[in-house]
Image 1 (cartoon, rainbow, N blue to C red):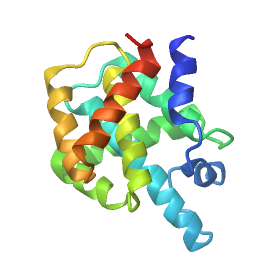
Image 2 (image 1 turned 90 degrees about the vertical axis):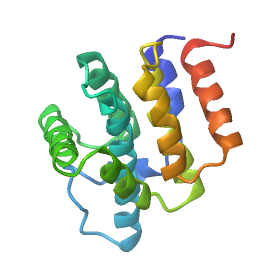
Image 3 (image 1 turned 180 degrees about the horizontal axis):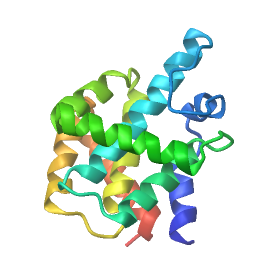
Image 4 (image 1 turned 60 degrees about the horizontal axis):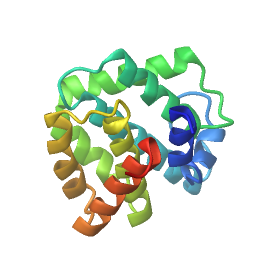
Length: 172
């Protein structure tokens, strides 16, 4: 199974996909409260993934490529063109520069209101960290910060780390 297929498998079944299908830009939808909640979860998940990519102080082009692929897979069916995606990533970068990494993580985590949403966001952030088969020291340290901010138990964190590694690179 190639890497893109494995990434697709990691994001399969996201309830946030419903919110993404209705959106054409990274703006708050004007629909129901349920749509707004799903959009908030989707956006927070994307930001958590972005923060993992940015944790080491720079985002490499391959990280951006894989991050963009992950976002597109989560938003399958949505109209998410290159310009919109680039603008969204630029907005996330600007917020990071303005507010700092810890504050952005805290704000994103607050939008993930269910245990399933928090675990899904951690899973996808983990995939961003592991996608190049190398976890930098900053990324490894970020696992603790993410698990704390997302209020995940140690056994859940360990299970997710193991599953993502196996999903991306096979058991072994």
